[in-house]
Each structure stands twice: as C-alpha cells, then as structure tokens.
Figure 1 (cartoon, rainbow over the protein chains, first blue to last red):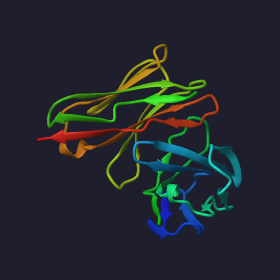
Figure 2: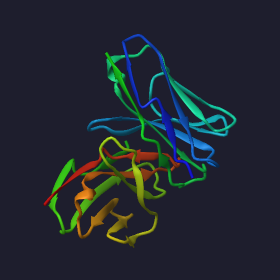
Figure 3: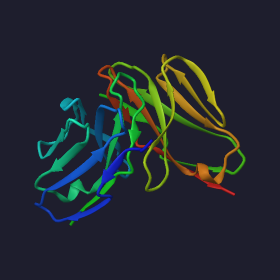
Figure 4: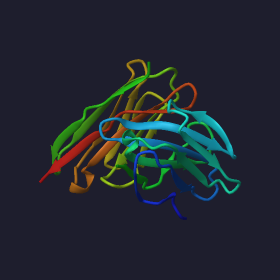
Length: 113
Length: 109
C-alpha cells in the first residue's frame, strides 16, 4: 500500500514568487492536512481538507491557500513568498474521522531566497 | 491559549531507558498522540492515549494523566536507531492536533 506522496521534495524560490505543492494521500483516505515545520516551532497547522471542502483552518495569512480534488489529492499554494516562508511543509492523510491517526508524507522543503 | 511543552533535547545511552515528558494545556481534550521523526523523514505514529494509564507497545510505552495534563513516552532498551525527534500532540475540542516543538533524543554508545 503506497504511503503519502509529496512533490516536489525540494524547492528554491525568490521573494515575491508563488509556489504550489502537491500531496497524494493514501488510497481510501479522504482527509488531507497541511503543516508548516520550522526548527524549534513544532508543526503549525495550516488547513485540513475533507471531501474537497476546507474543514479546518489554522492562523496563517491569506497568502496560504489550498484545495482538494475529487480523487483526494491536495495542493497548497503560497503566493507572494516571504523569507519567513522557508520551512518544511508536511501533509498528512487520514480517513477523516475524529481522533484518526494521521499518516505523513516526507515533506517539501521550501527555501525562499 | 493552547500550549504543549516538552524538553528540547535529551541524551541517553544505548541499552538504557529514557522518559520524555509532555505537558499540555488545550481547549478541550480528545487524546494525546506521540510521533517519531527521524532527520529529513516523515513523522511516524507511535501511540495514542485517550484514557488515563500506561499503554505498552514493545519497547515503547506511553502514559497519560488527564487530571494533570501530562503524558510521557518511555523508551526501553535504547538502540542507536531510536535517535530521532519525538513529537507530542494534543487533540483539542475541535479535533485539531496541537503540536509540541518536539524533543530531540540523542543516543550515545
């Protein structure tokens, strides 16, 4: 059974650019959550999508957006990149019921220069 | 506010036992998760406690005290491969995971 796949694994962008990250969940999982991970900060929740609808949202600016497709694949977009957006972006998939175990992808490491 | 506290870094010796503590203050509580994350890898699920007490799973055990807002992860017979970060996360009243910053565990031979 394939795990959670995130592409690309690494990205280098410059300030002001925009970026799209992709996440393919485990087959059968309908929920995809996105997190930002920076050293010493822990995982910061961005948003969760379930059945193509945003079900939960963290405290990030509107530059961070996402969507989910009918096959449960999800994309996250960051517009007008800032230096502080440099981080590891992780997605996690689950069946979407309360208290479910989340299974993580290896992440996309974004560097903003 | 919501807060999860765990030590930043711990060091232990191969073959020994180590306990990683986690205290949480979240709006509502629906369980406590522990994940392991090796450098440059995805976090992987270790345990989920929703009731008070100790749950044992091989060399790893997890304990929860809801009245104290406290959990710990106990690792026995430490192996070099246990060197990793250990993440504690509380599931709040909205069933959203609130994460600690992680504890980096260094195992020495």
